[in-house]
Image (cartoon, rainbow, N blue to C red; front, side):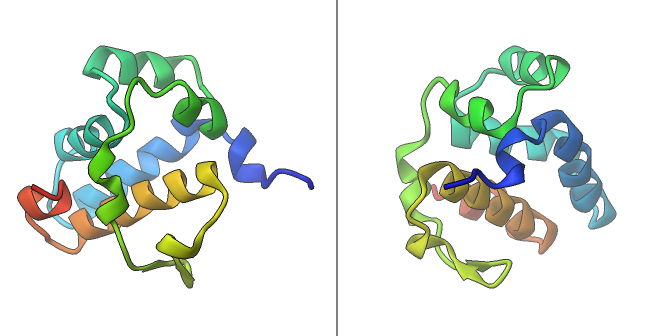
Length: 116
């Protein structure tokens, strides 16, 4: 089966869109980074290094230091697909991140977004 093109897309090329979406709704780059760090376990320096090296999405998630165990509590629909029904791991991880950024842009508190 052919991999979806998002797998080979650099995380760095999509990251500014995450930040722009958040900032358009009055949120911050720092909140976007906090969400990404919470989800993946990257430190801020490691996250910046991944962006600088233009790591593709597949490797970005494969190299994540420690995916957050609470991510399984992220539920809902993104792009018309129910997240909890996505079987392919990398695609599900990407959709988890998309969902968290959507929640940020919709005004949810960080406590709720980070499932605390």
